[in-house]
Image (cartoon, one colour):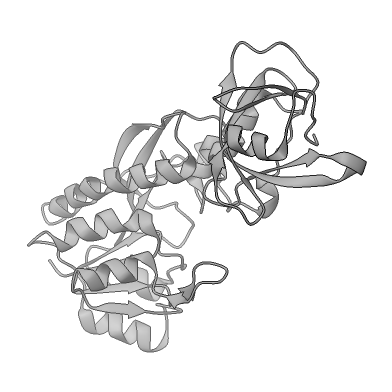
Length: 315
């Protein structure tokens, strides 16, 4: 079967690798987003999928738009029987969707029709979802609305960040895609999505990282998990003369045994981290980062700031 792969970030690499290592489905071409500067001061470099495809000795096409011009002509020349898409980052137009014999298949890390959109895992974590699922569907013009070819349940570990869950989903999605590819020639039953159950997962914004200790402790922990690796949880420590220090929060846990306190109040500092009161309950901040500094255990940051119980974070 002649396959073409479309993808860009890390979550797509396990499926690409599984296809490349298969004698049946090794891609005849890989399309990805153009090279970009992937850190503030870094050099321009290929996408994670572009780099992985090159290492797998697959032909790589780095394109701004696959639906027109030279990129579309290159795709046509490959004469794909099926196109596999995992987090490509471009909307596919009808001219691409209708090109392959078996259509365009997409892996989506939610139990569709729930969480259609760019950030299904992040939005699910933000809302405290634990029992979710993974989907392989056939792409149509409408966002994430195509018929479902395979779904499996997936428990999203509440101790993991969205970044860790994205990596886990990528690994679980690879064998699902191969299962669907093997079933195509024999015929596979597609199931239409229930439009009455649709929910959406728009991309995260910078403001999504702002933490409020007026919320419940569980909501604060969920938000910290959801905004990894971007935009990251952000809090402000109130210092002398009403000067505030910006602090990024990478990890936090529920603090079950803390006494009630005023939201934003530092209640204790121990070997686990910094205990802070919330609107209901308390959290223990365990891994923090100051502006321009590396990530550190919260205890070390507290020592560096000479933080004491009674200090306050802006709520």
